[in-house]
Image 1: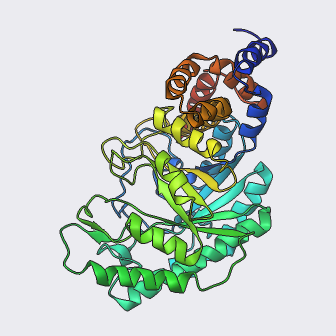
Image 2 (image 1 turned 30 degrees about the horizontal axis):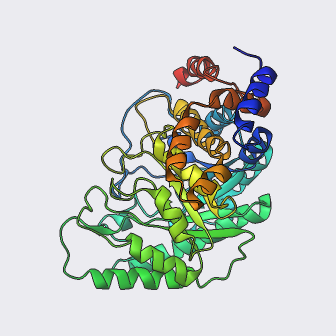
Image 3 (image 1 turned 180 degrees about the horizontal axis):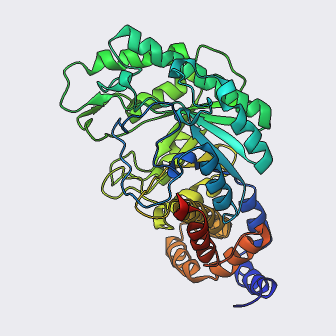
Amino acid sequence: MLNTEKALEIARGVYGKYGVNVDEALKKTAETPVSVHCWQGDDVAGFEAVDGDLTGGIQSTGNYPGKARNIDELRKDFEFASSLIPGKKKFSLHAIYLDAGGKKVARNEIGPEHFASWIDWAKENGLGLDFNPTFFSHPLSADGFTLSSDDEGIRKFWVEHGIQSRKISASFGKALGIPSCNNFWVPDGFKDTPVNRKKKRENLARSYDEIFALDIPKEYNLDSVESKLFGIGLESCTIGSHEFYMGCALKHDVMLTLDTGHFHPTEFVSDKLSATLQYLDGVMLHVSRPVRWDSDHVVILDDELKAIACEIMRGGYEKRVRIGLDFFDGSINRIACWAIGTRNMQKALLWANLEPTAMLQKFEAEGDYTSRLAYLEEIKTLPFGLVWNAYCDMQGVPAGDAWVPMMKKYEADVLSAR
């Protein structure tokens, strides 16, 4: 293998012919944070002091040995995974990952005090934190309805949970000096065709009116609302559809979350970014890999991932699009999932930053679609791998496949003992 500096010199020359500054691309990639989700480490189990099944149309499959069983193990696993991943990172928590010292705390009573140790841990590891209220896997979500419930007691319970979640998220932003993204997703819907969609959507809208009534500075907390096409057991009607949440985001001046697994297979989130950002200040991404449905497979470096990253950079949306990951696979080493998926998101960002966008957009503006297509294909064989390895080296993480034996050693030394 070429040494890093020699490889970078070659890459600078090749990309430079197309007007690309490789060093600027490296810098820009390193400055773009990626929010890595905690729930990959333990199959979305969380640390509530109660046992329960995973519900709400969510399913984690596989029983690969060594999953995290407590907060200390989850943190240790992510610290190791983080050592394999370049770039700026945040850690995204669900409400069920509270640290309550083994005590049972009702979800409508959780507060910043139950996440204080996460703030301390984030400071020690140079991480930002994001948050997600948990509207699933709970007795009061058992009938499939939370914020849209006709039962006023149930609806109020979840409204209170949403309000508390915003306070927790704000505590992250205030303590860490980095705004925390607080993402609302509810599983509410019908298995079979309903005849009163209106009532449930009125309930859901009223709930968000109440949740977002509390004024919280955006320098600390950035709320976001997430749609879904369907879920298991909720195939015929999702109350929080894309159209519902587009309106909700506009009304309450919050971000819209676009999950790559939450649309029809013929829809592409990459195409939605420049459309939604004509009207919204910001978008949150949940990047996953759907296989036939919202199956949350580990992110790979496929065409859509590269297209998402390219659309962010082409539009100059780096400050308006918050990138988060959302996959959970229990069939293979969970730390490898974190490493593979997050490294691929970083690869896509670097790929986008190395694109000769100015040249390609000039061809397009001139109507020279022949050259546009020709060069879009030619750049696919440029020495991207040389720049990626140099980027990893600069970030102090293993380049190429050097991370794999390190992961295997951690598995042998740590995970195998669980």
